[in-house]
Image (tube, rainbow, N blue to C red; front, side, top):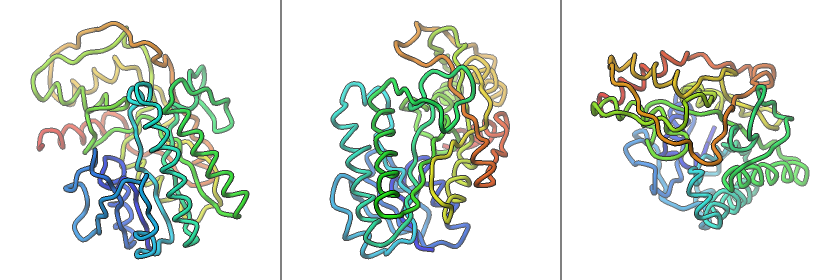
Length: 301
């Protein structure tokens, strides 16, 4: 299989590249390197430094991909609120460029979407058919991009897939951005500094290890398209998360509390039944084990 991974020099994208290589796929990466890092890209993989808002046909014509894993994105909720036009240009128009370039080669597109930012507040695990109530331009843009995938599937008979990720964590995670709390906590602990918890720490998320996410992402190729949640199905509070981070770091430093952030979700977690039944995917890495693996990476960097 020949595959292109957009955002393949980034946190999740580079793990998807590794998973594809393990399956002996021929992989090319498209990344602007604004946030991605060249050292994240596996040896021997062709890296094309390109913004997805720019024309992509030249790269796609050279690679002739069977599959495109589209992970390039503007991924910070706060940036989307401050600069919604930029967010839409990357996450909506950039996705359309990827779809058009893929269409010319009959390539299946697997799109990295988001769970929490699309569903909004959860009183129970969010299902793929739950009502979507995004609270930020980022969530709205991701949902709009999903609609483009669905319209292409109807119009051209393609089988494009959208994966709604939970809060992904693991090695190579950028400590900046909405979902970087694990990297922020472990980074603070590695420096002997006090981490900050916004609000009372009772807000919950579905934390899923990046290795599981990469495995789920690659497993979708050849399926019949659609939308799938990728998470653990379990919610963990920020306070519980910090306690686990401190445990794996062997630290007794307590976190400090700061005022709650405006608009932050109280509860967000995913129902993963559809992915289990249709893709055979179930998260395998427990939270403490995943945090321990992440801590080992933090200590080395």
